[in-house]
Image (cartoon, rainbow, N blue to C red; front, side, top):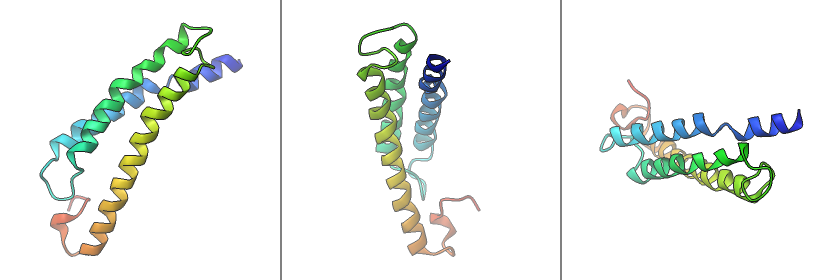
Length: 114
């Protein structure tokens, strides 16, 4: 049961990769609009989404770097999801601070639809 729980927790990459790719699509579709994320965030989302399937070998390997207890499967998850979520969180924080400075009266630069 322990192995089943561990492998299940490590196999969240398919919906995570889909979410990252969708985030990249949304960022690129909203480029050049007020309050949109910069293009680098879209590229980072696509790069992270492409790297996420590298976690699939944990199902098939019982030993080695891509086994469930291997360094490869762990660090691939850490270095794809980690920088992605930190970078987008920092960017979102900056954008919200800018929106707050502009005030709520300026709806053209708001992050939320009117």
